[in-house]
Image (cartoon, rainbow, N blue to C red; front, side):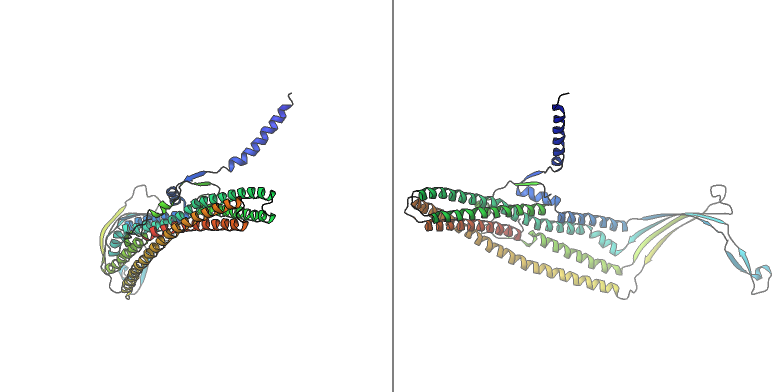
Length: 448
């Protein structure tokens, strides 16, 4: 036998054991634009899922309300076995006995059977009538609640998504600064060997380089945590890989802001939600007001009864029929002022909702105005910080040239490098603030 046979077998077995766990840990890679990320969250975020379940729950409640206006049909079948037939007392006078005496007599048969079918139809009930009218509004109310939830999640996704997109620019700037310092370190070493600078100057550059590398590590850790937060918000498994496709530019940040800052309260999802709550309150008042009106209902019954001394209902013997149809009117007369209290409470709740709408209008006005001011200020700051960063880069390049030819000091180039990093950090911060201000502005005007 070939000696390499067992070796190959062992090698294949080893590959199988390794491949098994790896296949079980396969991850899915998602490449998402911002819109795809929002769409994914609509399907997978727990809050949105629960809001959708609330809509389905309301649909079932509406079916229950509809059932109140439909006929109810019930059937009953029963068999009674009288172990002791009931005894009745008849006056003795019937049988020639003295007055005041009674004779016990058993009436009936040992076995009784009955089959009955009954129909009940509500003809009019004011509360049910209003509940039927309110069904569509109830669905709209739950749907709007879902949209409010979606909008809040959408705003957070926008902010985190673009922060992570922007973090790539931050890493690129850190890499450029590290490369710049590495080049400076290389050139400084050459100057040191030729006696143009001191060892202390090399050490200062090394410290700066180490600080930048530490800063990059911290930034990468923050990015990783940011991705975990975005996945959790979207309802995505942590083990899945997420790639952000969209880019962000200053032009994109500016595109939604103009001098035309007109808006309408009705564009806001939360305003629509409270408006629907007001409409439901109005339905509630009507419902209790109509409870003063009589309710009308129709009842019909058809039954068969049989009596036997032997348990034989399928054999010969009569079945006696009973049938009737009835019309009922329930007239409310006095309920201890309970209906009046319900109406007054509903009117108070309506007034509270109207107050909420008025307050929401004030809040929207304030929110839009603040968002407009913040957006305008953030755009100005972003433009200023960009110019400042470009100027700092120019200063650094000129200082570096002076250092390389020996006319500049290490202190000057260290200061220029520090100013450049600070300017870059400020620009990144200003750009992100502008993105947040843009999202807040769109949300405030109902255009997100």
